[in-house]
Image (tube, rainbow, N blue to C red; front, side, top):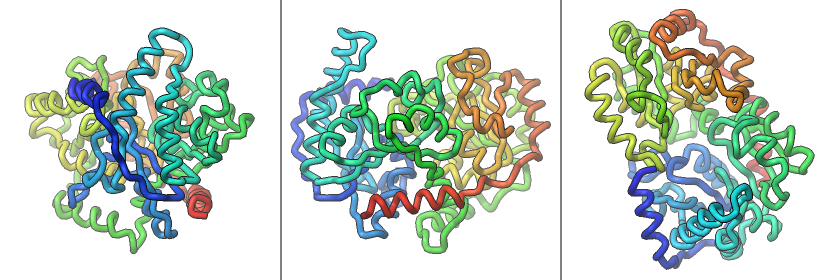
Length: 416
């Protein structure tokens, strides 16, 4: 974790919170790395949560947004004018960590955090909450007040994932759980529903709404259309070369240089004149818990990949816009492979843990069975061979018709 994050937690412990919350029917939740897209006006936009807020605004609902613990994107620099009771959240976090040390094996539930969320719900009058990773404390405060809560998928969902898997969540007290999980695909939905359905928790397959906006651009979606036009101007159109996207993962300590496996780096050097290589930093490396990694990446890139690959364009613009122009995707272990699969783009993941540990056997299982994701060795020969074998196998994008129907029903429910 970045030292600046630790420093912020410490300083926030002494902060007294005085925040005004407007009345609203819908409260939204996101963290800094979820508000990852910087607009031209200097505000940070949450692709997943602010998309829902914009759709609700068309139904006459103005949301109030809360930044989760240790966030710095709030107020005027956040698109949704997010609020954050940082002092109370920080003190609750410290209390949870201490409680976790004393009572190992049990979830260190924080009454302080629950009370903080309860006060926010009471002051806003919110009837529904939609957000990324709503905590057990938020779910408890909401259920006590009859407030409906939904958890929005933001990455991989698998049986072995500690937030979503059967053995991790099936035995949680019902008050710890949201009323619904909003997921991107049927594979993610089946992971949740196998334990959630019997608990009375819904699984709603809405698709990734940020992807939906770019996959089928609406004429009246000003943000998306402006971004697409600006992207084409800045990229100079698009090269005739085949394009390969490399998406970085945050916090990967088992890569020698910290970012690009040696075998893949060798392939980039070998094929730089033949392919256009794009490297995309993880949102956490830009704004989040791993911002220290971006500084190290820039130094690594200048030393090892300058003139062979690009990172600015692929990192600065929305992922779905980049995927429109990509032929293949490779990564150590990024969940970008799910979004790529929905665009009909094959991915190769090289983290050996995905191939050798039982804990990871079922990661990305749905799209692996569809032939869209492969787990491969990171050696130069294997990576180069995989690229040659898959360079021309892009398939049709996934149909969003069913997902759209479920999402529009959800928006009407939230706005009611």
